[in-house]
Amino acid sequence: MNHHDLYLITTIDVECDKTATWYTITPLSFRGITEVIPNLLLPLFADFGIRPTFLPSPEVICNPDCCSVLRDADSAELGTHLHGDYTTPQIKTWDFAGSITDEMQWEYPPDLERAKLETIFSI
Image (cartoon, rainbow, N blue to C red):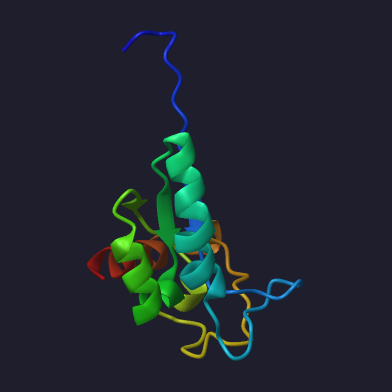
């Protein structure tokens, strides 16, 4: 690689829709994913030759419509990120609507953090 080459890495946390105060919308919705990703973001990235990396959180991975959008985004890479509130073991709630993700990964004891990460990587 020539040291003059520049690379842009674009990662995007992909989560359910939120209110202005960061609570999840009730009822749970995913318009930011199902409408914005295919209709706005992917064409924009294509125009600039950017291959984004989408990092869906657990509630997104559990939604079939979101999975379909992400599966069809063949110009993107997929990863994930830990929302421990929504990840077993010791899940905060299975009802994501109206909830807030306020647990921080660094707050978990090492064994719990490892168990939550193992859950995510087994999906």
